[in-house]
Length: 439
Ligand SMILES: Cc1cc2nc3c(=O)[nH]c(=O)nc-3n(C[C@H](O)[C@H](O)[C@H](O)COP(=O)(O)OP(=O)(O)OC[C@H]3O[C@@H](n4cnc5c(N)ncnc54)[C@H](O)[C@@H]3O)c2cc1C
Image 1 (tube, rainbow, N blue to C red):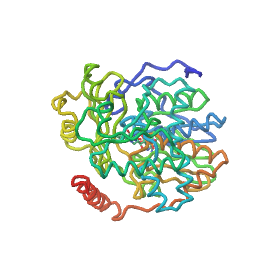
Image 2 (image 1 turned 180 degrees about the horizontal axis):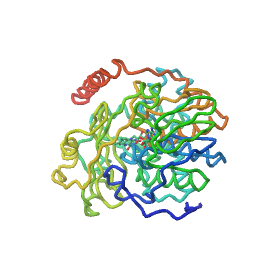
Image 3 (image 1 turned 120 degrees about the vertical axis):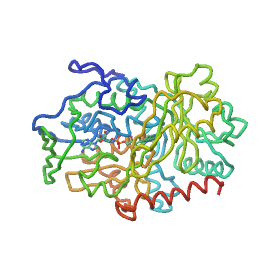
Image 4 (image 1 turned 30 degrees about the vertical axis):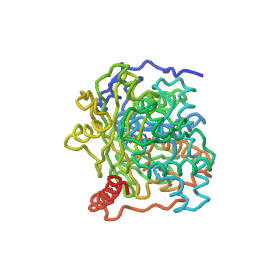
């Protein structure tokens, strides 16, 4: 194992330019990178320093390519530095749905990759000595017997695709995992777990630099000249590259409408409580697994390294902050852990992920020299690591796995930009009703 060392002295740690999150306040390795103010030439230019962009950059820097990453704000500014930190294996659509929609061949190929994102994360943490509070184990909590049966079915499907590490828990086993009487049982994924996501992406970014890659912050890409050698321009500089990787996800805006039009930004809300006594948090989550429930609009929570409860949930279609994050989260938290009904929240924030209509990531090429990946639809910590690596492989000439993803059909949201939000809200309302009445 080698520890990441910085080639040059960095300015003092700074969270300026990040959202005011628990992660920004506690991240390790948050050094300011320079603004791009020259015209560079590189093999690879990556737009966006989230998990997707940094994973691709690292894959390619490790292979010896010259890599420049341009980040509009700070490394991990987007969803990658704000999420629940839950390492969830698989995709936002279950493998049986993938099989029904896209056929057995696609399901087999995607099934074979379904555990790889978590392996990449664990591998990079070990290889580069990244200190990001990795804890093993995740739990899917069921409210109803119907949801338990769905989990049983998921376990069978996963095992059919060769993935082990799953353990069914009935009601009697719940007190060892979570002290809430809302659930009837669930499924432990011993290959899941949780991390401090901003520390992870910062550690991976430092690894890119260790391999000679260059990262510029506060350097939003303002235009892309497509062509055999794409040129991307920022306010004070430009990069001419052989390959451009577009990894701006929900924050890409209108930069490339061909990409942005096939996804919708959706925000989710997260809070971190004040630190709890160690005995109290251990009683709530004795196994220290992260937990997500089985509802369509789900709650997700876990313990942090300094004994806070980090609790997420809620949804705002179209992205952006709700009027009160506390009002969105506190009722669910209080239902789950009534003993914490009045606990102080030290941090509360929102972040945007990118939803696709199919809830499958959208991966492809705009031209022979411009590649993109986005749309992990809420479960992206592992998938972004996988797809970043796959973008890197494709650019390096091994496009078989890229082709599997890019051949899946993608559709724009019905209703265009004006009606896609209300139509999606309507659909989610229906699924919410089904959860509420256990249908
Ligand atoms: C609140 C929340 C909680 C979540 N919890 C979980 C969880 O617990 N587990 C899980 O698996 N998934 C979770 N997710 C989803 C997961 O975080 C995302 O799928 C994943 O981080 C997306 O990574 P990304 O690199 O594709 O995008 P991002 O991390 O959003 O990165 C995109 C980057 O591109 C930059 N950018 C955009 N446009 C430009 C431009 N023009 N020029 C330069 N830079 C640009 C942005 O500033 C941003 O930094 C959560 C998401 C949210 C929002």
